[in-house]
Image 1: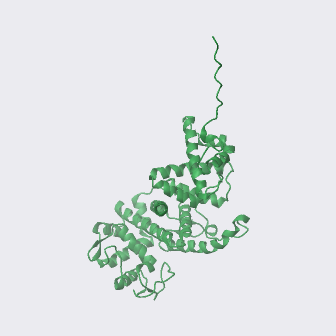
Image 2: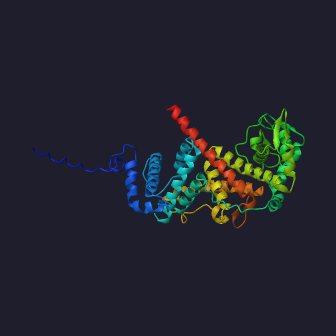
Image 3: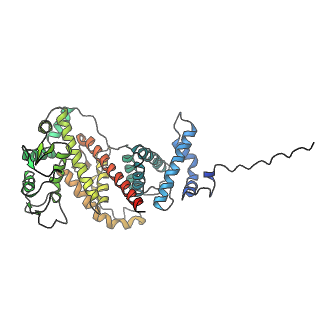
Length: 404
C-alpha cells in the first residue's frame, strides 16, 4: 500500500493585523511600526500587578487604535506627541458614543503620555506636555485640582468676605420682589440700565445704538450699550442668579426664590455655603464658555482654563511666568513662529484672570491661586466647559457628516 506524503506544513503568517501591509486602515501599519521600538517597555508600563498579560495586550491594542485614529486626524504619524486640537475632535466624537467611552479613551492616552514623559521619549516641549497632560486629565476626570476638606463654618467665614458674594447680594436686592424680563431672562431698556447701576456700572442703554465691537468686564462710566451682552460683569451675575434658580420667571417678572435668596443672605449653615459655591461655579463657567463661543477667542479660553486649573493645584503658577509672553530665548527655534500670536493671546488671558480677581475668584500676587473654598466650584465649572467643548466637537462632526 502506497504511503501518503505528509502534508506540507503551512508557514505561520502571524496575526493579520500585525503583518506589514496587512491593514487597510489608514496609518495603522505605520503606527504599529512606530510603536515597535517601545514594545517591551510599553508593555511593562501598562502591566498592572495581579492582572493577566492578555489584559495588558488588550489595553495596548486599544491604545494602537486610538493612536491610529489620532494619526488620521493629524494626517501624519508621530507617536511621540499628541495634538490637543486633534484630541479634542477625537474625544468629542467618542463622547457621542457615550461619555464613559470618551473617559476611558482619555485615560488610556494619558497613561501613554505619562509613559512618553517618564521614558524621555516625548517629542514636544515641556509646555506641550503640560498642556496635553492637563487636557487629558480633565477629559479622564483626573483633575489636578486640590480641594482640601473644609467645615461649613470655616467655608462660610471665607466666603463672607469675597466680593462676588457682595455683588450677588446687591443685584438680588435690586430685584426685590421682581423685575421685568423676557421669559428667557433677558433684561432690556431702563430695567437693564438700573440693573447695571446696582453693580456700580454707570452705563447708558440705547437699544438702537450699534453694538460695541470690543467690550470690557466693567464698561467705563457713560458707555452707551445696546444689550446685556455688552455688560459682561452684569451678564455673568445675572446668569449666575438664573443658573442657580435664585431667580425664576413668573410673567412678566424675574422673581427671587425665597429659600435660596435667604441662603445667599445668610452666613452660616450648609445651604448658605452651597448657594455661594454654585454662584462661583456659574461665574467661572459663564465667562469661559462665552469666551469659547466668541470667534477667534477659543485659545484664550483654553489657556485661561489651564491657568485656573494650575492655580487650584498643589503647585500654583508664578505670575511672572504664567502671564509672560515668551521670547526667542524661551522657546526652541521651531516654535518661534508662535510668539507673534502669544503677544496677542497672553494679555487677553491676563484680562480674563484680572476679571476673576476683581470678583475674588482668583488671587494674583507672586503666584496665581484659586481660594481653597472655591476649588470644588472651579472643578465643576471646568468639567462643564469640557463637556461644552466635547459637545461642540461632536455636533460639528455630525453636521459635517450630514453635509457630506
